Amino acid sequence: MILYDGDCALCNSQVSFIRRRDRQKQFRFVPLQSEEGRGLLRSAGLTEDELDTVVYAKEGKFLLRSTAVLGILRDMGHGWKLFYSLKIVPAVIRDFFYRLVARNRHRLGPRRRD
Image (cartoon, rainbow, N blue to C red; front, side, top):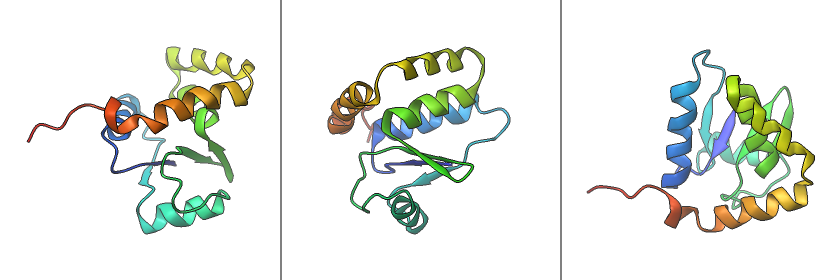
């Protein structure tokens, strides 16, 4: 299960990206703003207002931020799992870059066409 910011265009484009490649239908997507999403945030030890954090819930464990992204890429299989080798970079460094993107995610995402 992947928890994501449902109000973020970048996040939604990433959900679409994963869905198109998820031939085994192993991922389930839950917006952080939903009742279920808020409950799962609490279960992961986060507050309900931490909408800039992707959470990957798998087998009773919660992976957060860059670790969640790497876990998702690993589980997507094929060449995507090669990115999991970035796990050797300490989480504090990976999460610095994750937070940089997360802070700017509303500006970085695809523009809506009205």
